Amino acid sequence: MANRTFNEDRCHAKTVHVSMANETDHVEDEDCWYLDTACSNHMTGRRDWLLDLDPKVKSRVRFADNSVIMAGGAGKILIKQKDGRSAYMNNVLYVPNMKSNLLSLGQLLEKDYMMKMHQKHMEVFDEMQRLVLKAPLAKNRTFKVRLDVVAVQCLTAIDLKEEAWLWHYRFSHLNFRSLSLLKSKNLVKGVPTIQKPDRVCEGCVVGKQTRTEFKKTTFKRAKQPLVVVYSDVC
Image (cartoon, rainbow, N blue to C red; front, top):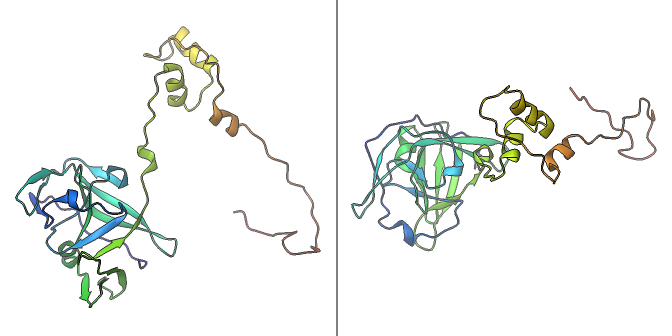
């Protein structure tokens, strides 16, 4: 994938059309995206991929068999490129239980992207004639490309049954003695009675570890490569 951001504006379409009649027939690598000429919007079933998801976007997704599914919102997806940089794919619909990821060629064309069909592959160029992606022709005569999508780690939830640990995390790893004081002195409303657990918080232990002190002086000349390294830490 070239160094380019998919830069489409967010649209609030009432009905989005998809050419695939039965999504359950396409069990592929979940990182693969189908280039679809009959799909009127980018869409995916991976909620953990979407950033800035707007749940107010309630588009109806209509498949080729005339079945309709309501989209759960629209957001953007962060993609890691081959050169190590990142790019955003904007205006991607979230369709719950969808098994395949679809790239709308119509949505790209609307933003001045250009497609070139070859015998064994399809190329997509941006408005500056730069190659964005290249999709080979699959055995089932479809064009699909694998995109390295970065999952949204901040959406990970912690399900804890022990309230002491839950409040420990909520207060940024505050020690359990101070948490008990919040309850006993009524400093915070809603805090339950905190009992100090038996096990140690791994995050607290790692965060309080110290490192070996840097020497104030070092060798002016090295006897072998990488013995002395000068760098700008600012």
